[in-house]
Length: 354
Picture 1 (cartoon, rainbow, N blue to C red):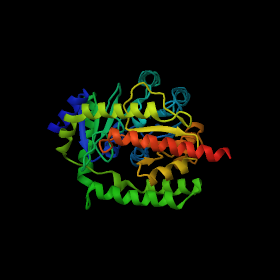
Picture 2: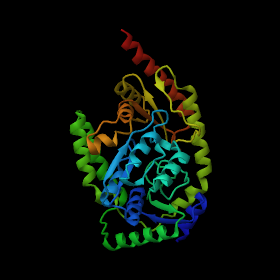
Picture 3: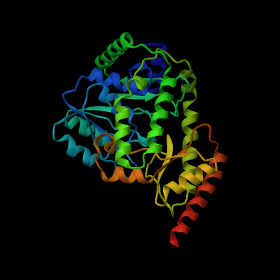
Picture 4: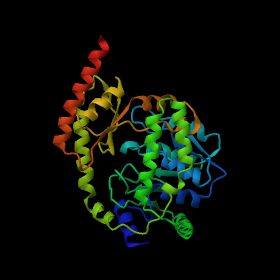
């Protein structure tokens, strides 16, 4: 392993790591190394599209499991109903928005049905009891760096070596004429153009799916090193603690009259996320007018890739709101924004009464 890989593994208490271009590439390398394309992969219906793309690029068929609305993570009961069919070889639970999925129950299910537990930790800085995991150091992540990067993590020496072999294969075939950041910017422009121009969800999802299936060049590339990551790792405990403090402020002071707050024990977050019961478009528009960084991630993956409706994922897609808690947002700024958001929501509800 390189010095950087050793440093990351030591920090996360994992034996082996393979560093590469980004979290998506790390996932792609793992999927290739697992070599289980005769079995399907299960993803939660709410997550980033990139992991699904990685599995598809690696030759897998994917399916989606609905989420639970209390914390937006994969629904364990529904997951077991899928696993008992014997069609699946890999489960990819996500620490969505930084919320930890139910590790104990999912670990037990994976052992019971002999499937690989492939943890997606891109939106966290935590690695649990898994067969293999990935971490990201790219745009907006907990340990964000300008160059980015991702790492595949495992305690299995054979799997680690197989991942490294796949990395070498990628290096032999890869010809990058632009940086990863440039490629990602190109992709984002196309993504947001589709979202802004298509209000019909079926048309939007079809076009997003087409974009995803033709986006391999934007996401699959290697990177040898990123010295900035070591600096970030040295600060990560302070970063995590500060994110918890900011989350606690949102959790305590955002008005519960208008929103459904997540029920999560650990206050660590990637973004502070909740469900808004009013007119979300109004909330987003008015908040942005006031200079608040606010978003509505994610669309249901089942809708994008399968044209499929899963009840809880559909609810989250309609109601979800994300607020930033990274280093660029101070506690004083968050307190000011909470006051603004509560007033916007109160005004929205007042209009709806009349």
